Length: 146
Image (cartoon, helix red, strand yellow):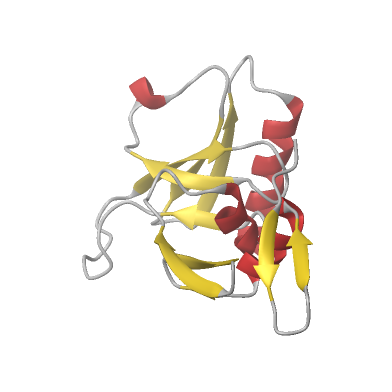
């Protein structure tokens, strides 16, 4: 189902569908807010960590990584565990969770990073889908190339 928004201009009125609105959003990102063009005015919408809308995640083209902790704190732990979220190539991202066995899920794929040796380990749950496995491999390849 397409939702249409009306965009008022000086020349004429144009009807924008969600795809066009998404394209407008992609062009107006400012750190943790995205801009929406509706009826000739701009409004900023805060993005809550863990509840990012798909249009925000698409800005990173499947290479978004959410780290735990704060920017000013140094990384002192040897192991970091990242869980893959979403299955679509442009909406996939890694989310850091505590590196504990109880956090492993049978329907998910994970990247375990050894910070001392700079090594990545990939772990797939027994019921992890092909798309999830592929997204983790793609993101791991991207990390290695960087």
